[in-house]
Image (cartoon, rainbow, N blue to C red; front, side, top):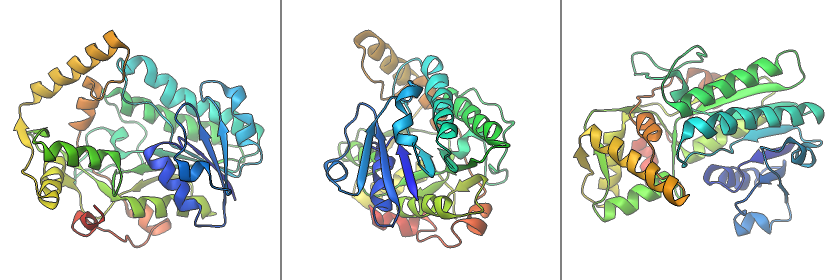
Length: 315
């Protein structure tokens, strides 16, 4: 198959590209401003296309004759997410869909997350609901992208697949590496209220994506997660123990919102990225637990790392 990956220069996109290079599939990588890692840029098996998801006309060469699109591109760390996320989360999918229809693409895989259903817990996990409501802009717009994909693929030759992935962890994943650095210097803090999260080890995530690409029957929404949800507090405590560091500080919630507001203000003043925003804080404090039973039935019957206890050795 000819597979096009958007966001190919990013953390997950580049790792998916390397994973696919170990198969017989043809790999196409879509990049915008960020350059590909050197090993991918120099690989004779990779075809790179420079395009802008905000400009549909630039997408046609990359989509031409492609069999499957895996959409990972997006924008997160910028101020005023209510202004840009409708365009980057929903508008980018619309642009890709338009190009996909013109190129007879057969499958469109959107990587999403279970958080789009809002607050979920082990007792009431995320499934495949599309009628949820949340005040987190990132979740609300990604859910809008899911609805758009499913609606516009109806009655066409494009098969829509949505992979709602838990928090991906593994060697080189930016979230883990940032936590490692902050823990080392006693700079990592977390709020006190327990927040549920669902994890998935990087190798299992990559295997699930490949299964979704290759499956003739995969269609609709799948939660990609491990077998045992935990809390973000416990996850960071276990990382601290694994790295030989002290546990993160526990601080009041208001301090994180204040930090997010400060980062946004500085980013607006100096026109820089915002590593933290109030929307990111709200997102982080939203519990998200997913029902992965459909994934196990149709994509990945057995996880290589069913819990963090097994997966932490990857780090």
